Image (cartoon, rainbow, N blue to C red; front, side):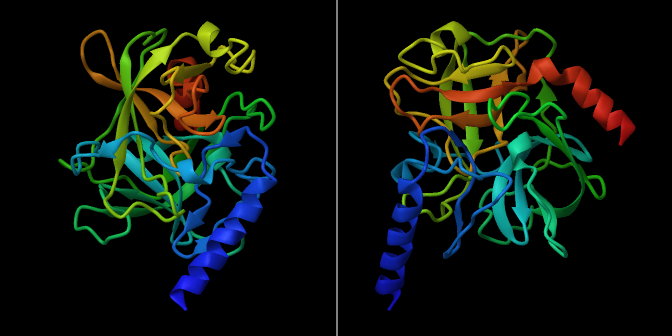
Length: 290
């Protein structure tokens, strides 16, 4: 019986994905045994590569080595990642701001390694407010950034820490950065082993905009990271999560927010991220007003 259910699930996902275009936001599409379709996140931009729907070419993170990593949960189902930038605020992607159904509960899970387990280190805090960038465009994916306010401050400890924002005009061209997340495994289920990560080099927007790559789709406030040969990337389920780089002082900073890409880890199609240093004024303004 379980085998039959699994076959029906796979066939359903295949049919669902065949109609998808090849530009996708990196959102989670399946949690547990059910297909998770989110109108505001997905709309007509679904995954096009079912076999590549998680951190690609990565490894399991050392537990709690990324204490700023946040899992965003909707009615008990994981749908996006985020980064803790203050005790009460999380940075994520604008396309992770989904429509709220009556009585639906949004939470942030902090201090987690495996979000499928109840870990003593976890702090589950309800999300009080979601602030999407006013100029976010679902068509061009520009300004794909949002702030989630927690209902109460997080308790900081060795497993829950803040990540520093990249400074104004911080540029990481040619540097190795790392992307992490709880993207789903090759059968569409959440990874059982926990948070995963992979290292990717930041490339120039000119290279990313080349004809054989995105052909002009990369805006100035976006950044690209990955390999021309493919093989390593973030993917579905990693949306809103952190691209962490080291600044000139050697400190880890939040350089980018996982936004979108064409497929996952495909040759010449790099991962695309929202450039955090371009939004410092917006971030500080929204936090001060909320």
